Image (cartoon, rainbow, N blue to C red; front, side):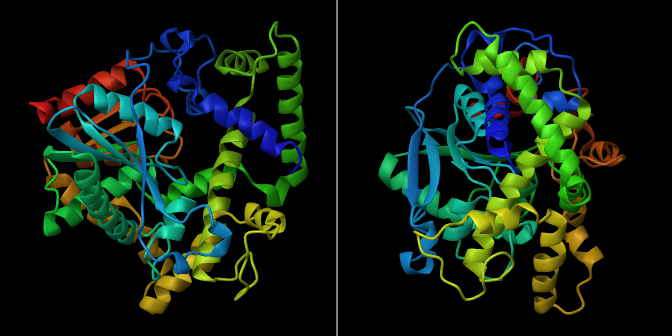
Length: 431
């Protein structure tokens, strides 16, 4: 789709406005608020928290499986990547799990890193099991990413290996352990905590779910609907052209040609994007992430969904056609065409309803109700939650739930009220 890549560079850059150290982050913006605006540009109507301008991030990598088992097309992903932010002395350690299709160093991860480092934590950040670098390095050959319980097993194995490495190489000493994650990473954190109850490698003192989906299937269905190319491809293209034209007009009127956070903010401020246009950008961003995931899975699992089955893709082969085909594949297609058949090969009695339940917080509801160490933070207007799901979360977590009235999906993670609430939850971890 023409202009899509350019528009998404603008969009994804704008999504990190709230993480930038420019003067804008401490100002209250005057964009018209909607839950879609908050999801795209951040909940900039509330003042940002005062966090460190910069922190020393140690980018690390670890060998998880033999290089010969990694597809040649992923020659640049020969090790699993993660990051460490280290305190000067012994202190609590927190693992942060990224959201769907996101890496350990995505903008939202950087915001959480600063917040927890400021509280005195050693911070270890991991990519989502749906991120290509994680997929191609994972030793899992049975279950597709998205199976929350098995994703948790995969993540838990990586966490143990990473923890051993940072102790040996960086001299990190832990007084206690905690875990959190945002969006899909929030759901993963809950399943990891349950697994740790049995294996007790970390004995987490605190677990925080940030804007998690209640049902993975419900949430991705919502996002798929925002970017429907099958029924209205021409309309979507026309809308992208219109958005790009308005961005171009605004950019040409700016005094400076610099493409920085200030100019991106101005583009969104004066472009007057409609709700439908914001939803299209959100859906397109999700589709790009899911396309990367589906291609990595196809190459790693030899499913033949978008590439030729049994065809070895070398590092010089063009991937354009494969990625174009992947962009037409919804998560619903992936669920019905890959996840469900693979689960049914493991157990022929598995139904679609069974799998939808398994890939949700409903599957561990009793644990979430009774575990006093597990907390929830979400927003009343989170775009990935269906009607009634906020009330469900409130009923499960009761006084351990904090539901902000506004913020969209993860739009308020660097705002003052959010960061202050994190400090309320975790302050005992640094005593």
